[in-house]
Image (tube, rainbow, N blue to C red):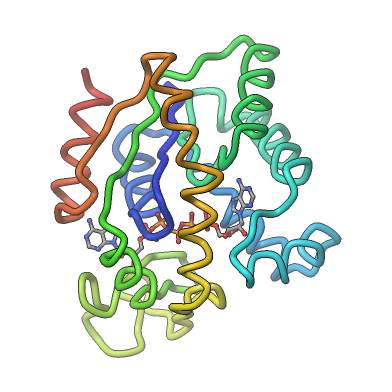
Length: 215
Ligand code: AP5
């Protein structure tokens, strides 16, 4: 099974993708995580992407399309994947269609996570992650049990993203409504678009997604 999680910044795509990975064994493919890894490693792609990501703009299509094309060829993706943060505009959606057709694989569900804009800003500005194991937290909704220490692995390397400022979030939300929201009718016409209430608590959102995937 191959699926897309679609929703604005802070909708909970990454949070739910990790839960889907654990429950259904689908591999999480987050273009944001891949680009952040390239920035941290200082690769050519990372050098091109760094400033663009800090402004909240989209990295050029040719870069993200080739990252995804290479990644879904890897062995661990053959039993299914969950795309998190890709596609983000019409050109990427069309490139994905071509890629999947060439590989002879399908897309079963596109799940839209609906969350009000004011909640998104609060979610993003309160977010932090463990730099060691990648576990995600939030100042209010999911704080670590012991200050400064990851619950999952005990690391003290807790980080905030440079693009998680209130100002950049506003720009990311504008980019989402201009570039990504038009993909909803695109997938609606293909009759694979489903919706979940992303305003609910994390476990309730997971339950709604599980019902779609298990059907
Ligand atoms: P990317 O990393 O994809 O960021 P994003 O789409 O802006 O999404 P986020 O990671 O901010 O949010 P999320 O929906 O995953 O929410 P999360 O689960 O963390 O992209 C970053 C940048 O990379 C882009 O701006 C762009 O520059 C570039 N890029 C990436 N892909 C690209 C592409 N395809 N093309 C071009 N450029 C690309 O949740 C947020 C917080 O809320 C967390 O703290 C979490 O704990 C909390 N939370 C989650 N769910 C709930 C809930 N139900 N209730 C309460 N709190 C919750």
